[in-house]
Image (tube, rainbow, N blue to C red; front, side):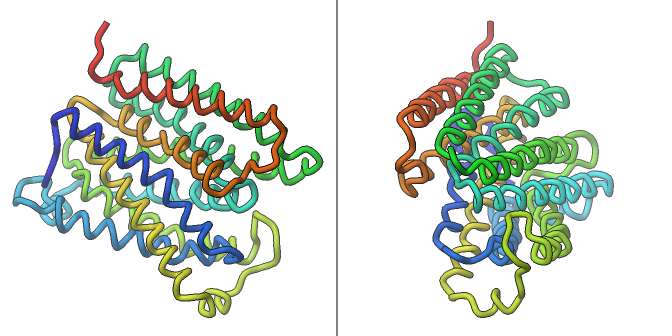
Length: 331
């Protein structure tokens, strides 16, 4: 399998991961009026297909112990179970995320949900695999926390007069963040120790876990939508435009690409899971940029809300910069 060890290449993988994780949800915006539960079936299929593509290409460049097929055969049962469980936990969080996006938009759901996941996930991953300068790593996290607070305040200023929607959007984002921060430690345990999974193999097993979870969880949300509205039927899925199915599939392909590259970077000796996960979750800033500048989600918002958004971007940039140099700065 291909495993970059030079920090420059690993950093490029993490930055691509950040862009992919922060951009896939744009495909939801391209399916206006299509309920997120229906979008999610094709999205999940895209994730599974792309995990296979990466496993059969970069993950299978040789016949080493971590090559895709050989690793699947030799990995420990416990490691496979951890990767599956990581996929299940992620998927519940991601379903809450897409519900929050439907209610509150990209500029709010991502910074709050994924921002919280960033803080929780980095702390847990650092405990499991302590790599990187802790001062820069956790100093950057403090700035990210402040950015999350600014985003929540900006959203509340924008949603004056719609407090019920505001509370629901933020509540779903927070629930998403708590769960989203828990999935990566399962991956960390799956790729470390004896009989470990390689990064491409864990990406595929993780995707299988997502699929296993999607069938009952998404069906439940079709019957009892958390984002409001009536139940959703499969008839609406079948009758949807072909382009909407394609956009959802592409969304899964984009997200999975970012995830596999993030796992590969996390497997690099110099980087480690905490730093890779932290930089990947710069997706919060990427998604906020899309929401504010492309989709105009804060159009007409009061000046105070826009000032808070500007402060949020500044805090995110400085915080992520500190996290990015944490593996190579020692003091």
